[in-house]
Image (cartoon, rainbow, N blue to C red):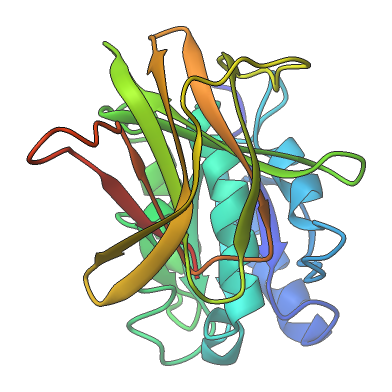
Length: 264
């Protein structure tokens, strides 16, 4: 049987080195191959991309361990960066997250849409690493949301682009909004799924749209393009929105389905 592997994101960053060694030793004792890095928390440099790249592809680990203290999990930038890495891994069916707490925090990373359902382990328990091994050897359903495709494409040269589309079928029009907390939708595009288009043709684009849901005010943009199962709607976003709202867009319909993801 091949040895199981994990990628460890240490959210205290460069702090708590002794505890990091304890966690790594516990994982090694139960026969796991351990790779990882201290969590880099610079959103301007989009440091989360390095972690995201480790979670996907042929060399992806069997699990992504998010390890930290209550104070780390309460940090808005940490929460947002973890959500971004989770979006990439989820979209590419990469390593699934497992949250490991170092102290009393029953609500670690509570409310983050892309980390809902992630198993939670308490590193103070003597059997926590054995529990992880048991989890890794249980069958799991394929990663990814069944109802919608959501991803983020980011690079220092092109900025941060969110990608939204139906998981199957088509949308008649598309809308993407960010919470009114300093983030903005700067540009939009429609093109092939998974590849930011070099050129785009927008049908009746609308910008500066306002929406509200669950007590959150949103602003964003929409198009009337038909978004097929092979296409996506892309929105270039500045800042780090706490929530995003997206879905099909038909201004003449009485009701349209929309999706809200909390990211921080």
